[in-house]
Length: 216
Image 1 (cartoon, rainbow, N blue to C red):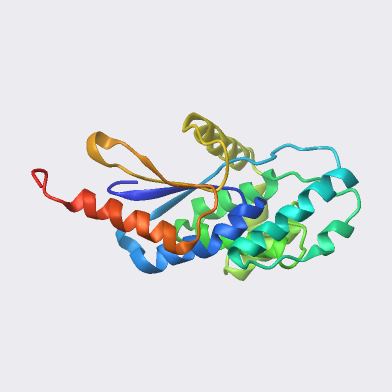
Image 2: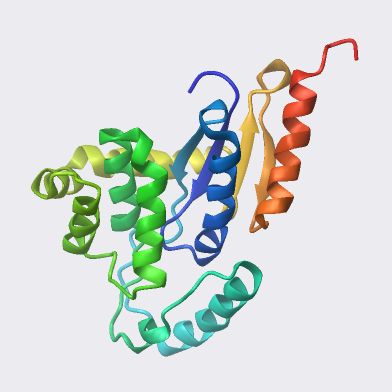
């Protein structure tokens, strides 16, 4: 991506990324096309095979409450009644990658829709059929989406995203970075949840510095 832009490292099954969705929406509303956002899948728990234990559910549940308190985002706690749920984040992340490749302008919208389906509607976004239904909501061909989702090409591209996240030194999600600045450098805009006002203020100051005369 050429020019000044943002890179958003996220995961569709990360509760704090769901909490960060209104912040991303506010950034897009204020800056629009002048500050595009590239989304990269961070890889929260890809390849998980063991079902969640009751202890894991009890550990996760209060985090959802913290996200609601901080962001106002809704959760459907019926999720915790699921039995033998395998919290594999790879299928949902790969779905975002498939949409990003087919329709880059829809990637962030599809990410948010997948988050909403999982957290607020208690839909199983580890199931490709559910993901296909979500893709169809965006007028994407469901069968073509499912075929692409199952392809080795999409699997490899998604794992390249995870590798990019690791090389960038991203240790948690959400992480939002901006650049390129002086000498092509990138800097952290938000690491972890931040409300819209805080992030917009950071970006405003960053853009003001970037546009200031060199001898100012």
